[in-house]
Image (cartoon, rainbow, N blue to C red; front, side, top):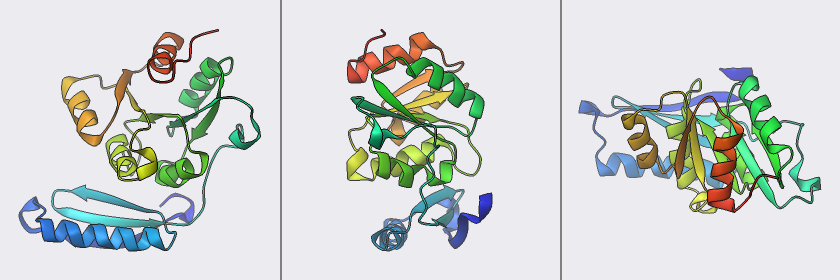
Length: 196
């Protein structure tokens, strides 16, 4: 478990791997109770096993960016466990009218995003413990992020990945390697930000 920030909380097994509505209602009510107490939760389902992870009430945002001090118009968040990807994205965004906030710990992504209130979110698909589909699904359950553009970033640019991303609530999808042209096209499409 990363840095002791993630604690195993509850696990439920649903016979046959399908989730009846009453089971889902119960599990969602458990997550809601945690969230009402200010505890960030993540719901992970796999082959009939439902696990609720509880995280410390700590927001982890890289110190390289402080959107509260900026006069820039937009805040762009990027959730990825790779520092190389963050470096690439930072070099692309540094000259545009937006703040760049890299989030390196996917388990703390939702609580970090609640604090920074981004205009757009780039979300890596393949990360340890929790993947981009799961984070996107969690984001779409929060009123604040219902209309926020969420762009999945991945090296797996297949039809199935795109369908799963849409089903999870993703707005768009770009393939790696990340480059200036792709990022600027996304920013122009959703925020009307053009390259300088």
